[in-house]
Image 1 (cartoon, rainbow, N blue to C red):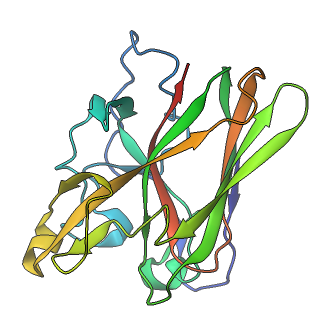
Image 2 (image 1 turned 30 degrees about the vertical axis):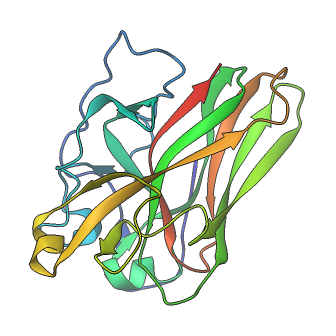
Length: 216
């Protein structure tokens, strides 16, 4: 389920992928969470309505980053504080109820953020895990601590990035694109995680999620 950002900006439309999302390999391990129904951008789309601003350089399908396998096929972009104004696209404030139905020691997110701001560390959202006993627990997304902008420049230290690439738009301004791996240790590994919620607080950059994997 998606809760869509509101804001009353004229000439906006709900963001959705323009290019087709590749089908999921039927042999994919169920620990690589299926995000097919939640993507709102394809890797080869002009992301955020910006020509040449794609993730087509990112290898798709089952890929390994930081020794973790991910199912890489699209992007879930959440709203930021000015995303509708900047892009004329309306992104969801949250995507909730993504099915997991697994026990696991950790959950891994391949992600970044969009619409960089000058602020230092600030919470921009959270990831929430919902358990089979009705309880839930959340992990805060803190900008410039465990999530960074997907555009980077040579003056920034990128040792935390799980992947780096380029696109036509970043190359034209001497920058690059990048994704990060956030590993969240599950405090209740004995419980079944029924679902995960992806939440933006719309106070700064918007989280963008590429893939989610649950470790045994």
